[in-house]
Length: 297
Image (cartoon, rainbow, N blue to C red; front, side, top):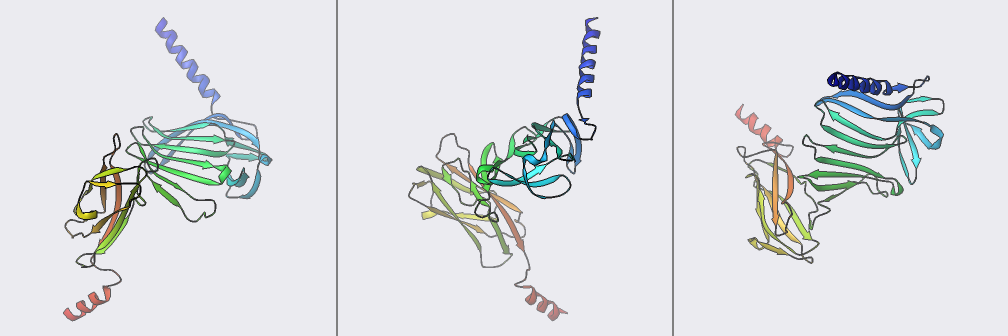
């Protein structure tokens, strides 16, 4: 009897929840708790949160951007207002923490919405570790995009208010070692005697020692200051490590990871993620190649 009562209680609770979700007003505006499902190329997802009906004129609108988006003024910023439906001056907007899970129930995304404005969004990998954190600083009219790798803050990117076309990137902003560019790109032609060299300029906020700098493949060779490590780096120094890209057709890969190990305690190795391109021909030697082909013909 107790088992039957328990089952009936669960069914009753589930029924109440279903009745209480996905409500609309007589004007067709979403209100209250909602659960939506959608599918992307990489899987199916379910998102849950709350809708609220607010008057549109609480914002100073700049212009419409599609059927359900307005650009509005808010504090010191111009930002986007999203809504699911409109009836006269009333709009239905997200207004709560919204959770998105994948098809097996693992957290994929968490968003904070306040009256149709997205304050922040956090993304997670399959193990529940945060990979990205995007948030708005409305007072200073700036959007921030944080990237996490190996459970630590890897990159902080933002567009300064005085130049919205130029993104600023800071790598390992919470760490001691200063790396201006942790995502360099390389390109060369196979067999070209001219090498592609990237100067990795390292400095630090507090004195440390660089114990090793290594490449994950044979495509990039690392040369050190004074040709030796460990290398003691002080706050007044800038150490230049040359990364030399010299691939062969048999060794070439699309990427390479440079690993920097320091003397810091409880600090993971620093990773520099290199993107690589190489070719046998390009615009600089295609004419001579055509001439050779004509000769043989």
